Length: 66
Image (cartoon, rainbow, N blue to C red; front, side, top):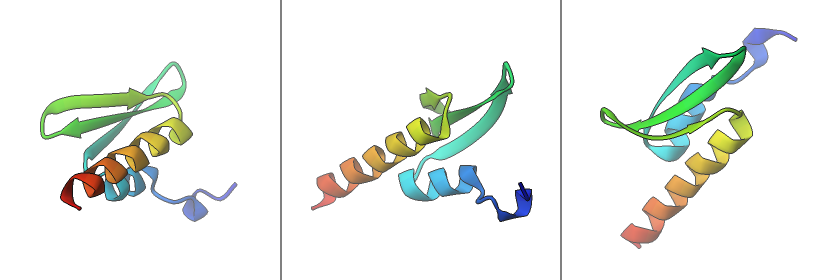
């Protein structure tokens, strides 16, 4: 698989959630960590779980402003 064709998952999660996202490796897996400033908010071991969390954060943020 050509790595250039893959989207930048970290940036995608940041754009969806509005939170800072850091990606690190643990036991051969990527761990997606969400931060509000320096405060850790959530960590997920799979991209689908991280994306669902980001969508939930975005939905919750929109609901409060409406």
